[in-house]
Image 1 (spheres, helix red, strand yellow):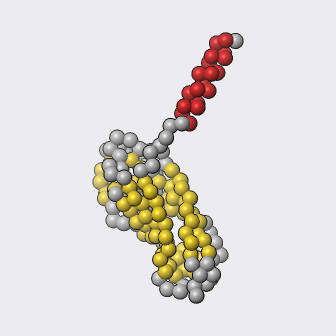
Image 2 (tube, one colour; image 1 turned 135 degrees about the vertical axis):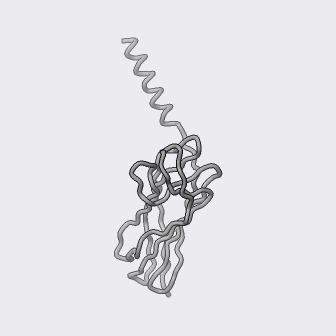
Image 3 (spheres, helix red, strand yellow; image 1 turned 180 degrees about the vertical axis):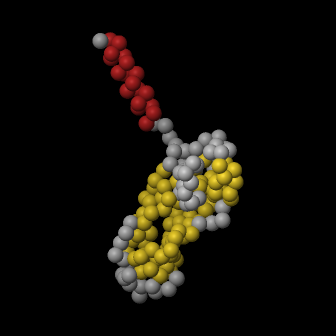
Length: 154
């Protein structure tokens, strides 16, 4: 019984210490809205990436890291137009994955055009899933939620 209790205590301690591991936040995200005209606008999503780190393109890849994925909750207030735009980035051989991958260092700016269906103010909710890596390690994929406030048209 003592052995069982000691084993249980060891297991519980390991489990607790594993939950205490902090994953460094190396990417800071900001969102905003830019009005194009009364009927349409652009959602701007920017990433500030710490030195030595990078995130990956929205382009899917079967054998590499988790691509950046930006999703918007459907709403009767707007329609998305076209695909998400991303910057040029840098396409190079990634030694960790052994394939050529497009990534972004320092900063990345994504945008999505939308068509308004109302003149009233509303919010757009969504998520960003991304994976950050440096030359030594990759952080596990993270998903963060965002809200963009769309102003009323006077």
